Length: 170
Image 1 (spheres, rainbow, N blue to C red):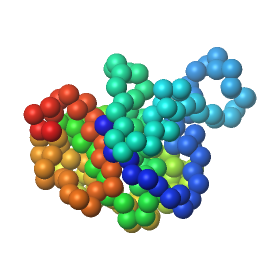
Image 2: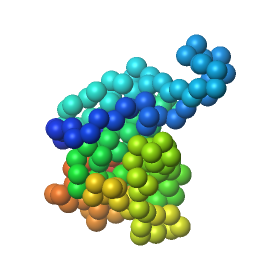
Image 3: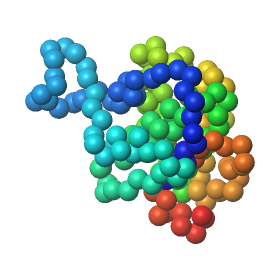
Image 4: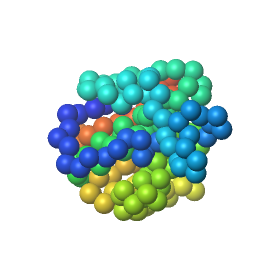
């Protein structure tokens, strides 16, 4: 689940730049030696959602995490000094899924010189749990089992991955 606030865009980002490169050897969009990306129809629907709370559900491997992470990062880039939280029940699962994808999207944007390299800080269980962006926005990783420690009225968005793991906490 991702909560979404209305956004007044200050800079335009091409959403395709957020997505990983297509790896399909027989892709009809392939042009010799040129990388390209795709947004699947269900991903586009989620990215276009303007409701206050967006819910995204599907089976394992159905391409849900990347658009959720992209929407969260885009909110952080579009709104200076925005604070967001990415959560999953345990750090181990969070670091092995959604948080890894979050850092990969930011690295992709930085490597393409679309954004400056973010600052990572506050290590917990071997991984950084806070990311500071060039515009003052912050993204934090928290455990769902310690959900109350990470939220506050000043957060502009939150993303809960595999919320069914944390039903009691919500």
